[in-house]
Length: 236
Figure 1 (tube, one colour):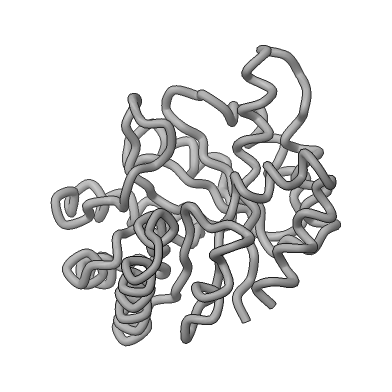
Figure 2 (cartoon, rainbow, N blue to C red):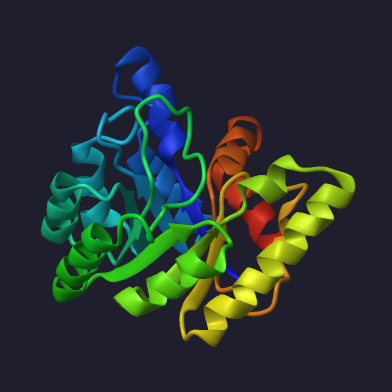
């Protein structure tokens, strides 16, 4: 059964829209835990568009489940991660112009930087996950560099319909099998909603799903605990 990592970035997005102090993502994390979240995920972006350094520092002291920090493959961000020491770091691609993460990290092209970051993070006692497209060369490289987890980018599946969505699901299933064959843990995320999550949750060996926007959007209407409970019921 897949576990649920709840990404609380967009609670901070709402706060930053008014440059005020509420809603506080730290409170959202506590409510997500009460709703059954197995992990809390935050993306500290280089431009600090939503989660702030203060949020990460307080979350490290208060989160009782696994804390998963998403960050770019940049020396500043790796340094912050090594200092704060979340339970896990997920390295993701990052572009200033994007609205949200658009595709997986090209770890083949950034092999040397990824290798250096993985060594530093593992030396700090932090589990390392790479956010990758479901492509064999990317997964092979992740394994060779010593990453422990691959989180498959599910955006193409989530954005597709009909036969194309089914084809993308088959692609994810094959990639997931390959992830496990090379000895890595399997996770998935991006664009997953209450309507499309079940087939991904049921993929063989799926360990963790990281879901943010859909849960936060639902929480605006029904509250954070209930929104997390509903998602847990779907993937359980």
